[in-house]
Structures are given as structure tokens and as C-alpha cells.
Length: 447
Ligand SMILES: Cc1ncc(COP(=O)(O)O)c(C=O)c1O
Image (cartoon, rainbow, N blue to C red):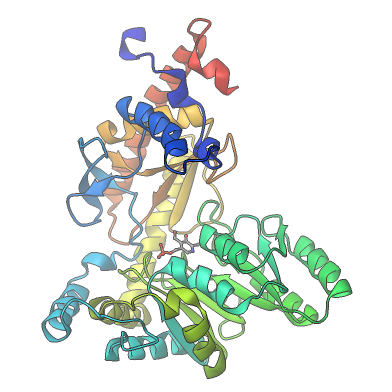
């Protein structure tokens, strides 16, 4: 058995990116070299499953190169194209037509002349879809998350934020104020406690509460209604990031906001187009023109960054039109059938999956070393899927994040589960073999 396995340097199975986050030394470029050394060791041992580039569309079966240049091919559960709209023929047709008329670039910020007629229609479409008075576009979802906070919150204000909220939201909060209060994931009671404490001392400054409608590592959801009520009670403003469920979840595609009867009732809804709507880009939906105009001129990633390209705005507009039609409902139906089937087959195969049914199906692996060894085997088993490890998730809770698409077939799902089982068995056997190896076994150091 042991000839199937090979020793790898201990450092490839231990450590994390967190180790390199606060490098010390006076030279900003010299002091970061340790990261590359560690990363390269992992790369040389086939244990760096990040930074891949597709050689094909992000479809259900795709080919890609890892960042050492090796070709990989297989069923694709690593791309976030939940409704499979990135290759939808109608959307591709729109993109081609728009390029003919508008060229490929918008050549300006939305605060100047970067918007196109499609952007203006898209803003209207998003506002109508979400039942808000207005919506404003951002160049990316990240920019929208960062920008809604940095645009509205000032240094004397307060941000109360779910501890697991996306980095764009955390960074937006850090850039805006030092007054940041983390509440444990989805704990409305803790959020309330922070609001009580803040308002007991400060009734003069603003408070923003920040959460997501579907968390992308745990596939779970807060009680949005309760959080909005809390915000009303304490004179705070709620921001909900709907990046992962808008358009693809719920009978009408309004995600958990719709499922909780909160359409049109959340103070600020922030979203991304990159998971469901086939393009880069993001938005903030808000209650009136005043907020929209303020964000346009005081939210730096909107004011000082180039607007979406004409093709992006037009294709997202078409994607929203599809989402609203019977075709959209059919795609959501196919997606949910795939999600349920994948979760069921994984569970039957002895795997544990996180959270509630959504397009994100995270499979529990555990120790980082084990997860890296399993992930190394995935491409040869024929599955493309992403490893998530600390610090993106807590230590010892590494997982494989499988992202489901409407166009996945029953066979794709069976193949993916079979591939994962093969990779897991081999990776786990190697993990145990390494653990049992001599004194300097790398895994002893991960305990
Ligand atoms: C919850 C959440 N918000 C925002 C973003 C940023 O969106 P984008 O990648 O479209 O910039 C992401 C993407 O990773 C996300 O998961």
C-alpha cells in the first residue's frame, strides 16, 4: 500500500495563509517572500489547488490548468454559475449585438459618462425586482459590499456585523470606522445586545447592521425579518448581502429575502451578478433617490472606478429578464433538483454536508492536511471543486465547496460523488499512512 503514497515536506500539510498575513520587517517586498516559499512547496507537491484557469467555458464539464501548468479535466463543481447563464445562447446573442453597437468598453465612471442605456435600465429592473425605489450599480459585487458601508458610515458611526460576513463587508467596515462589533454567526440575540450597548451610550451617530441572506461557507441564513425589526427598534440601518441566493433560490428567485416575506422591506440590499447573472458587477438597492445619488458620489468604488462595460450591463439585464420568466423558474427547479440529489448522494456516501439546500454544497472534511491530500486527488478522479481551508473557515473545519449549476445532469452528479469518494478514500489512506510514519511525520505537527 505504501508505494502508492509519497512523503511530502511537513510544511505542505501544515500552516496556513494566516501565518503570512502580518509579515515583519522594514522592506515591504522582501518581507513577504516566506509566503511564496510555502506556497511553492505546496505547488511542487501538487497541494496548491488554487489559482486555476479554465481553457473552456465554466460549464458542467470543463478543462482547466492548475497554476503549475498541468491540464485538468472533469465534471465542474467549482464554478459559480448557478443558473448556467454564462453560456446561455440568448445571453451570448445579446452580448454580441451590444458589442456591435457599443463597442467593448464603457470608458468612464458611472459618476461621469460610464453608464450606458443598458445600465440605466438595469438599475430600474433591479429596483423593481427587489421592490425598492432605487438601485445603483457597482463594477463588482466586492465593490458594492465595500462601497455601501464606506459610502454611508463615518468614523464616529458604528457597524454591527456577523462574524462570518464576507470580506468585502468586513473590509468596508474597517475602512469606515473603528467602532466595529462582531456578533456570533446568525445570533440575533447577540446583535441585539450590541445595539442596546451602543444606543445606551450614543444616540447621536449612525449604526449599520450587516449580514448575508445566504452564507457562502455554511449555506445558512439569518432571520432577516427579526434583524430588520431590531434595526427599526434601535434606529439602525440593515444591509443584507444577497450575492448567493438572489435569482436562483425561491419560487420567484428573490432568495431568502423573498422566502421570508421581506421583499421591499430591507433597508439596503447589496448583491453581486457573478454567481447567478453571468457577469462581473454588483448593486445596492435602496429606499430613495437621495441614497442612490449619495452613494454615486460618496462611495469611492462607484465614484472613482470605471462603470460596468456595455456588454456586462446588457447581459445582466437579459439575465434578470430570464430570471423573471417561466424559463427562470424552470432553471431554478432544475438547480434545486440537482442540489437535493447531490446532497442526498453525498450523505448516502457517508459524507456530511453543511447547512440548508442551496447552490453551495460544502462537504465536511476536517483537518487541513487531510483536505489537502483529498483535494490533490480530485482532478485525477475527474472532479473540479474548490478546497476551502483556514482562515476562510475555522481551523480544523476544512471543506470542499461544491457549487451546483442548473445544467448539471444526473450523470454529472453521480460522477462527482463517485470521484469524491475515490479521492477521499485514497487521500484518507495517505493521511493515515503519513500519520503512522516515523518520528518526523508531518501530520504529527498538525495535531
Ligand atoms: C457573500 C459575497 N458577497 C460579495 C462577493 C463579491 O462579489 P464579486 O465576486 O461578484 O465581486 C462575494 C464573492 O465572493 C460573496 O461571496
